Amino acid sequence: MRIIASLFVGLVLVAHGAMAGIELAVPPGVTQKQSGAGVAFGDAKGMTLYTYARDNTKGKSACIDDCAKLWPPLVAAADSKETGDWTLITRDDDVRQWAFRDKPLYTYARDRAPGNAFGDRLGNAWNIASVPITTPPGVALRALFVGRVLTDKRGMTLYSRSDDTKEKSACEKKCLETWLPLAAPQMANVIGDWSPLPRSDGTLQWAYQGKRLYKNANDIKPGDLRGDGVDKIWRAAILDPAAPLPSWVTVQNSDMGEIFADSNGLTLYVFNGSLQKTRELICNDECLSKNWRAVPADADAAASGDWTPVAAEGGGKRWAYKGNLLYSHTRDKSPGAIGGDKWAAGVGGTGGGFSPIQRRRDYEE
Image (cartoon, rainbow, N blue to C red; front, side):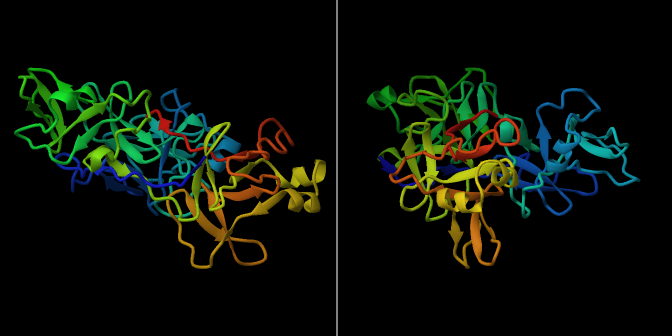
């Protein structure tokens, strides 16, 4: 089954109150960018900063040697001084590195331009360094393929409807069989942009920026978005929308779930490992060209989110995903085919090889 990729048009909410238009205190050499989901940090050039999940020992970085080449530490100037949430650690090579709330900060070598965030959630270990918006107990922010979305404590997507008002919910009676109001405690108070609004039965319902929030009974697991766009009035509560896919990219069903493909439905792959070792050990240039094709980009192609056109050897441009060059497998003949999966895996070590790009529906924050 062929599914044309599209960006869900959700309820895009704008940060107000404590987050809107207010610059957080940051040390020299650190920049910040606001979105509906909060504030994200960058280095002096605006390159995205990250934290590492394995940095569990206060004052020490677990990213050293080869890791530090791919994830360069945010080096502090010689005269830098700690301030507020911003502290300094000394690395094993005596270089001083900035940390935010005790988490050392890094850039990602494969980010190509300010605003790129190719390292976000990579390996379930790396996350953008940020300060998210404040949420009431039982409400969270979760990163989905459509962007950062409001959810309940289980990670189930929250929605709003366009014809609700602060005074009255348009969802009553039969509507409530499918749409479940996000309950607020009877003693709940206003929390920044969050307000408990009354319902006709005397209960209270959480609203964000005046928009009443609901869950959809048809959503089964975290990451589901089955309520988005229903009856043209229901929208997922997307605070920070993801960039749209390039027009030539589609999404296909496969044996490994939803995967990205080209306009003909043929699977897109990235290669992780050493092409040089692959050429030396199992497949020379002639062999590679018989099995793999680079994905060319038009001269005027523009980057969009994780998808970027890059200069190709010999001239012209080709497409990359999260900084990794894209390929198609010549033996894939139908949409959803993944005949190139794990091709050349293990060359020069464990893992690696060619792998399809999955569209993961859900990411844990």
